[in-house]
Image 1 (cartoon, rainbow, N blue to C red):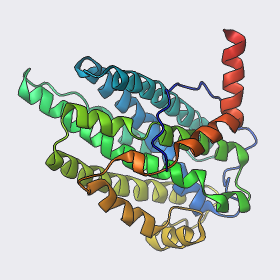
Image 2 (image 1 turned 45 degrees about the horizontal axis):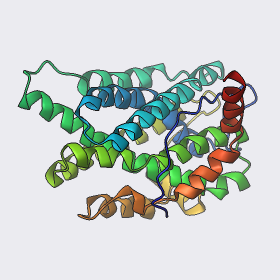
Image 3 (image 1 turned 90 degrees about the horizontal axis):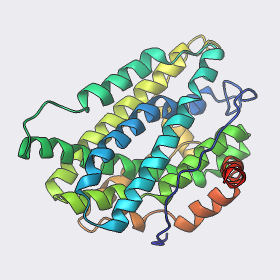
Image 4 (image 1 turned 180 degrees about the vertical axis):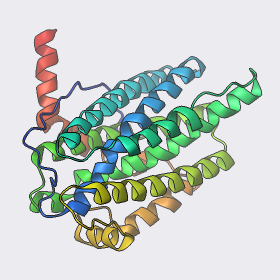
Length: 293
């Protein structure tokens, strides 16, 4: 764990997917596709983060927090792009995610999008609801980031190195900026009732969307004749370290709901920064930016 504050910057990474197999965790379609749900949820979700935060910027009265939010926006925009670029590779391998991503796009663009509300309290209420939702979601993206940075079972199982680098680059940045969304919520609102209510919404939505996405992938995988995704599969992979452990997911709930919660108490900034200093994609992006300067 670390409370170290580091300036946030977007790293313009790129990945080549030609050599990544459909089942990038060898012999394990379920683990592959459960993690692949990230590619379905994150592009639309992180575009939504950016859209909401651009509306919030004029309301921020703390200059360091404002700089953190600007850095957060840059990082989230790159995350969205990087995961979006995996989808054509899936299509080339016979797994078209469009039916699912169309539903996710509707969720973020319509259900959680801007509404025609009168100025003043109603408009601010809806903006603060979304700021609180993002804080709750970021609790889980940081949880997943910390998990994947330490998921040595994926390495032992021979997971594709390019996909692991994407996941760990993204996870490291989630740990690096894990306090921003909560600090912004506290700065603008901070109400405990809103925090608890939006956590319940976010958690239920993530569980529903994740299991639905895993089932979609397993059912539409062209190499499987009877692809299924069950909670038992998830629990067993969690016990082996290939997915987050069920107990760890459950323990994350009282953490966020405790009165003295702060994201800096979870995860290690030093570990995240160390990975970003060694990530092949992040190192290549740094060298390209230096050469272009």
